[in-house]
Length: 287
Image 1 (cartoon, rainbow, N blue to C red):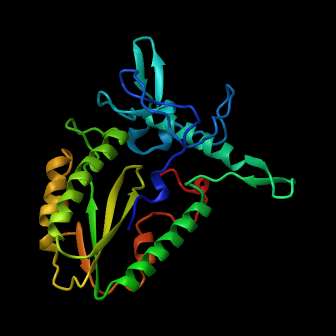
Image 2 (cartoon, rainbow, N blue to C red):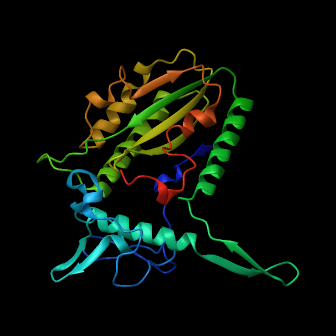
């Protein structure tokens, strides 16, 4: 049993849509449905400008790594081929799509032949966040019911926001690098906790500047003897497999590892890491 991914970074795609890579090739279609962006030559009310993102990050392309898979709306066709769009343009298109989703609904035939209309929902909406919190609470009840002497370990995986030249890193590349490190660290976690009963929940937390880091909440039965130093191989694995991750930021004697046996409300504890919980998405500050 595990809970993967907070709603913060979950997305929806058009039926029949495709992902593009930097060389223009395509990947498999998504199984999710999404509304297309509003048409028209004038910027929508939800549009953002480059200056709305901090310190020039808005003009950074979403990705510069060759072969990086990108969604259709993150790619622009230029005379010399497809290229990743600037961050601010992708944010604007996403906000436009989200606003259209809020104004849309679906109709279907009810049990007695009547027409039933319901609002569409996606994973960025407050209602989805509330359901996710309920899912965390259900996870908490299951763990608390099954485990004795519960110990909670919070591991935080991050990476530098700056590239080798000191400029801002591209956000898609930054996020993917963290996931590369996490994938390796999770395998190491199985070795560290070999022979013990444990579950985990994974949560992305966004920063105000738009970048993010990853939290892994691990729940261990009868783990009272565990200490932060036990998870040094896990953090080291992340650093070794995430080039922009620094060893100092992932030291076990800092904020990267927390081991506690006094967490009474796991749902609330994990939800603190989701970010702004319950607020309408388009009413949140851009930064």
